[in-house]
Length: 434
Ligand SMILES: [Fe+2]
Ligand SMILES: [Fe+2]
Ligand SMILES: [Fe+2]
Image (tube, rainbow, N blue to C red; front, side, top):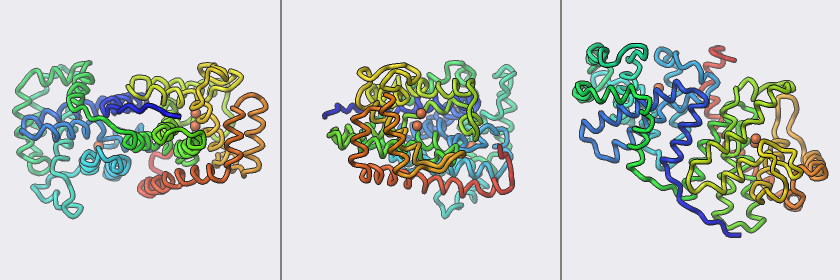
């Protein structure tokens, strides 16, 4: 089976990611967008290369991404003052992005975005690996934090410049502060910053660099997205990876082309991205869900569809991912499609999702053994929930598919372990535990 692969634009993926983060915290996203705009302008004023301007805008756009994978994600107010939270969120941001090759520089910029200049001494920290340009993100973020949203913006410029100027040398690179002070004289800069369409301005500047992702880069980036979804709860820390591993192996058995199998994995990584709209207290609830809570859970494949809908080249992946709760007899949700309307890819993801979920521990039960898993899947075929052919394919190749699932999941579990370790000190102290 041949699947035509189109290159996907990195900007489309970033816009999707920004939208998804906005569902979780509009405050952090607007802070990131303004930081990106300020950092981009400082980079331009300094005469940095176009490539660096782009990297700095991207880093600004994503610099607090580490906060989204923490339970503490809503405690943004503490980020200015709590040194431990500052360390953790910058490190987690780096860990999340560092394996995605196009973000190599961005990840380093993010890791060091709270490093102070300390009259030059700050940059010998970490064996000299701190990137000087990460200081631009620090300065841009601080400028944004100094703006009072309630007051007219131009009237605030002298005090913002004075506050930043006072810290030149101790906190900020003096040359960067000078560049910022020159920009600050231009009214349009502040009007843009204050505008409701700033998002589009920043996205336009990102689009100038039309980076296109091939399928293997798409795989890496969708894995990053899956960690944002899964790391919010240790019971599901590798769920999307398990679905990706299972679905990829099934696609292979159905003779999908190599890129078709990779697309299937992308669908697995992204299938639950809509869960980011669901409050964690419902998502991670230990007991039975109320009818109202279940109604809220039902929204998640709808939001997966919305998140992926504007990414050119991912149309087929979107239908595979977003229909994973549809059922053969049309009793699934939220689109209520029935068997013949569901492409094979969606039926594969649906089986991979149930299969992975049954093998995982949940707060209320242990992961099931293969006998119980097979009985339950068989029941779901008989009740016309899951596709008979796909489940039979899984049973006939159980060990091979299970190994693919485990391989993918152990990879993500290892990374989650690192996350867990880096936040352990806080958890022990009980800070912000929900
Ligand atoms: Fe930060
Ligand atoms: Fe789901
Ligand atoms: Fe799922």
